[in-house]
Length: 155
Image (cartoon, rainbow, N blue to C red):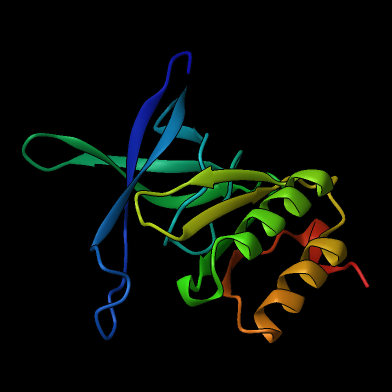
């Protein structure tokens, strides 16, 4: 990724979840303490690919930390945890369906978990229907990290 950097996001851990206190995201510097997120968060809420965030620099060694969201991109972020008891085929089917719908799937370091970047032009109603269907059948569980205003108003 050209001109890529890492930014860090502090997480609130409750009951042992998420399993980490912060996460690191790919981002592009935009100057004046601003970065554009280039990868979807695995655990952080209210952030999506393309969002512009304000950062602060601190720590030893110095690191870049997200301070606030200053410009939402219109993308949404959803995480899916697949239940291994269901086998791998439901996961493969959902991956194919999300790809067909225009969703960008990002692998995580956690086996059986993906983070999905949903661009603003994707019909979120169709994505949500696929996610709800599998969750109702006990194949996976999903979490909406952030739903953009472009997706929130869909029927």
